[in-house]
Every structure is written in C-alpha cells, then in structure tokens.
Length: 77
Image (cartoon, rainbow, N blue to C red):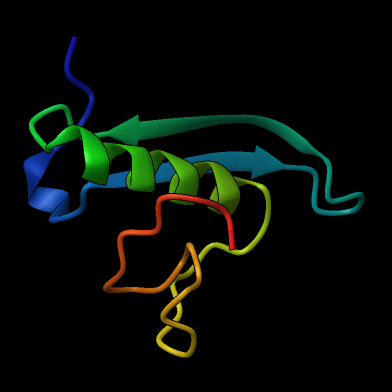
C-alpha cells in the first residue's frame, strides 16, 4: 500500500501525535519517497527522524544543518 502522495511535493514527511500537557509523543509515522536515489533517501531519512523528535520545520540559516531547506546532509551535524 502506498501512503505517500506526490501532491505533497516533498521527498518525505513525518507526522506524530503527542500529549499537549506533557509533551510525550504517543505515536508517529515517517514517509519517504521510494523513487529517489539512495544518497538523497539517506539524507531524507535522517531529516525526518530528527524532525519527528522535535523541530518540525526546515531552516535557511545553516547550510551544514540536517534540516537545511536545500541541503542533502548525509550525517548528523
């Protein structure tokens, strides 16, 4: 079953639910496109796993950051 929608115009995305009062994450899912090359896929996997743990938006400030909007980070920075 393909849960990813190309209309989202993203290589991947993460969703999660949490308890507002405590901040405890109760469940989550990460979706990664399967039609991208492995190097980009590895970068997207790192970014989405990072973002599901807290910061949920990309940045334009640091090009060496895993969450840099236009980067392909291959390791955690």
